[in-house]
Amino acid sequence: MLFFEIGLPLALYFILKNFMSEVNALIISGVPPFLVVIYGLIRKRRVDILGILIILSFIVGAIVAALKSDPRIYLLRESTITGTIGLAFLITLIPIKIGSFQLKPMVFYFAKDMATGGSFSYSTTKSELPGLTDDEPVSERWDRYWVSYPTFRHGFIVMTVFWGVGLIAEVPIRVIIVYRMPIDRAIYLSNIV
Image 1 (cartoon, rainbow, N blue to C red):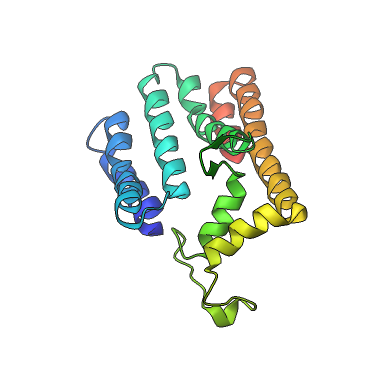
Image 2 (image 1 turned 90 degrees about the vertical axis):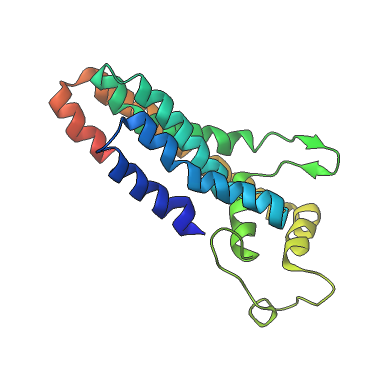
């Protein structure tokens, strides 16, 4: 699935931007992860967190690319994507509960996805995870740990805060570089950040 969520969209974007506008290339390259998310919802009844983040980043990138008449705004495109993803990380820390669904920190969803063979195409067997029985699938064990162990919850909350703040912190650094430096130097330095 990583190919359809990351590899194919990147390849499509870099190939198509040579033949059409950057906005259209971004929109078309966002189709494969969108289809993966829809497939997961319909076929597997599973929300694909990575796919949703990639779709979100392509949407934000397309909006910024549409406003690119100013080269400085274009240089901020990557920051809008990382800032949006960082904000998504922090939003998942809000204790939202709708029915039986409770929002959990983003890093929890990534880790659970990897442990249960989700988008990251890593799956485990019972022999690799000691203590599992046929009575409790891996996914349910993660949910039980979340409810039962405060240390388990705290670890994912801290990691999500760390990643969210780190991704958002990149935004003001790049803004300072882009608006305080000459364009040539800003292009060079913004690629380092």
